[in-house]
Length: 440
Image (cartoon, rainbow, N blue to C red):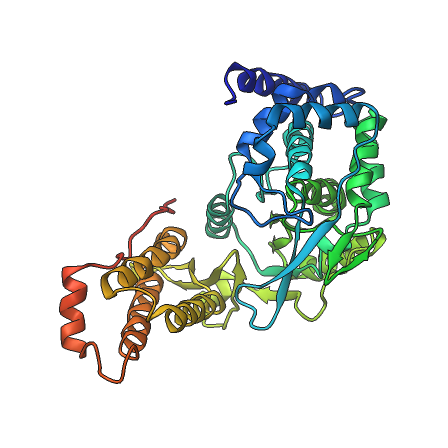
């Protein structure tokens, strides 16, 4: 059964919630559970990716679909009777990009639980996204990494800045306090059945290596709900506080740019940077969060000082390194950005590992085709104004990696460099191009 006008009906109701929240940021919502109905859950079912990793129960989307309507009706009946109990989350560890040896925990829920999480996410997003501030970019409708990067780049270009605070939150997702979060939700949502189901999601537990653990803190990354829940917590703890308190107590102009737990603060005056850093650490501690003191840095970033020959710093944000350099005309110091060296090395390492593992698995043409497809995402993301050299360097090194491993398919070399260059000319690889223009 495919969603038809039921989808538009559900979306219209959610848009109504968003409109009410936008026109009255202080509005309280007394009833939201009526949005969990057959039409809305059916839509959520169709929106979920069936190719994702399986939860503890091992049920696939295809298996759930075999008796879709009876399954959803049974789920709704259990919800009405408060008999629905979310299953434990299966924990998997994946490598952190740009951090060799570091692992990121992901929580994989059962497919049925994902349906409820998806609808919960939609309701929360409709209520809260209209009141989120403009400096929050992560996991929001109509916003993206490139929106955040472009906004930061423009701010650095247009404003006088002396210091940047590159903030590192220590295990942000894993330390969100459940009780504090529920208190925040209850300021806008009075439907206790809805709140109780969110509490049940938190209390479902995490299954790792056959051992079930319970905790009063942490939102599993990978959960359908974790992005909006983490944004709600950060809105009250960081964003709203920064806008209403920090800005009023600074000598100069300050601005923050946050994407999930990745954030930087731009300060007109150096003195403000030190005071903000101390105040932020204290604020985070109040809500049982922690700033990584070793990785949180104050960075000199003054165009005026750079013009006088005083060395300035650089910082990373969303995979790019921001630094000060000379304009094309040579007359001005301007902010520039390039691919982060850490991310570049991490991506090339992954490509090399893939080539080592798969070099004998496919015919040469097929191997090259798959290899090139892996480069397109990098070109698409890092192809921003003034970063053509960074993308070009990545493509050059990736090509060298392919050449190295394809010549180890047997004791006899497949190519010399000349023949390989002719092969690349005949079957071109992706080219460096600007996919995102940053012009002011």
